[in-house]
Every structure is written in structure tokens, then in C-alpha cells.
Image 1 (tube, rainbow, N blue to C red):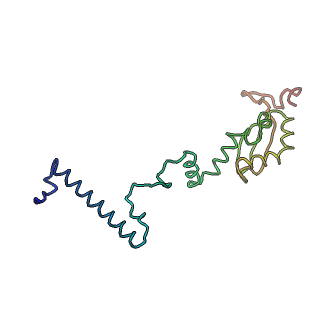
Image 2 (image 1 turned 180 degrees about the vertical axis):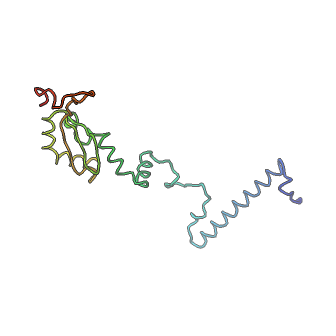
Image 3 (image 1 turned 60 degrees about the vertical axis):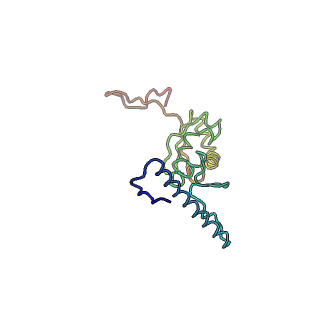
Length: 176
């Protein structure tokens, strides 16, 4: 065999031959280590080349987006803000279609949810169903996300427009 050429002076076929020889030596060393491990009764799995995943599951395998997002939310502590957003984003799913058709969530602070009903009659009905509504919300988004309900009727129009106005409740025949 001829004298080896220093790597800085290799080019073309000589460089390719040197890379191939290095890869074959590395492969032979891995095979030798695995054979020695089998002879000792040790598992050759830890001598497996990097980048090989094998037939079983591997952390590098593709994952579902929902699984990745749920792990991210858990790692960053975003479960509570996500549950609170679910109350507003999926109100119909949380309380049912009948209640959702006649009410809407307005504000959620410190576990206290403010709900606005479309009429005073529905506000009264929702106050009577408050325990059921809390149970449904807890079943959908989890316990202790909403702990108390504040239910009110529709907001009356404001009669305080302009710089000059008369004090009072407004037209008494309609809103008094």
C-alpha cells in the first residue's frame, strides 16, 4: 500500500477513498462493540448507531398537533387561562343550547363569571338555574375555574348624553 496522503493535499478520488475508509472503520468498531456486548449477555441496543429509531416508538417520531399543544400548555402552566377562554369561546357547549341562546358571558375575574341575560325574565330563570349552570361549566372546563355566577338582565340605554341633561331615570313609562 502506498504512503497515505495528508488530508490537506487530498482531492477527488483520494478524498472519497479516505472518507469511505473512515466510515468503514467506524462501522467495524460498532459491530465489534455489539458483538462483545452479546458475548457478555449485555443488550446491544445501547450500541445502536445514532439516528436509528427501530420498530418501536421514539420521541423523534411525528406527533399529533393536539398532543404537542397539550404538552406545551402543561409545561408552561397555561391550563387555567385555556379553561377560562373555553368558557367564552364555547359557551353553548358549556351551558347547553337553550341557555346559550338567551345569555352570554361578559367577564370572568377571580373565578366569578358575569353573565348577561337577554331579558329580566331570563335573568331570573338563570339565577334559579345557577347551581346547574356551575355544574355544567365545571364538567366542561374543570373544577374551580368558575366558582360564582353574577347574573343580570339587559343593560338599559343610557340617557346621559350631551353636556346638558336633566337628572332622573329617563322616560318612566318604559324603563322606570
